[in-house]
Image 1: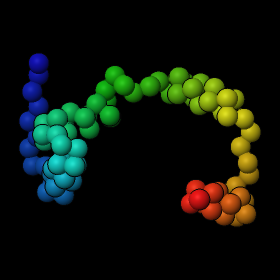
Image 2 (image 1 turned 30 degrees about the horizontal axis):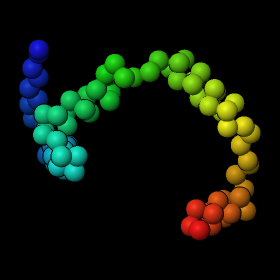
Image 3 (image 1 turned 180 degrees about the horizontal axis):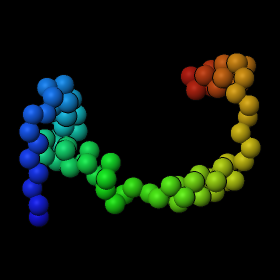
Length: 81
């Protein structure tokens, strides 16, 4: 399996990766692999497939309400009960 060495990584990126790895209970190597897989991995869905999945889901859900102030206020209060 190939190896990748990253040179002169900005401190901010390194710190963020390290913190994310710690929260996820992963090694830095595993966290880097997850980040790369999220961006370039085979789990990425083709744009047309994604749109087809979204359209299918929208048909299942039905019409969406218009996002008015009143609806948003109602939705916020519903979520708190």
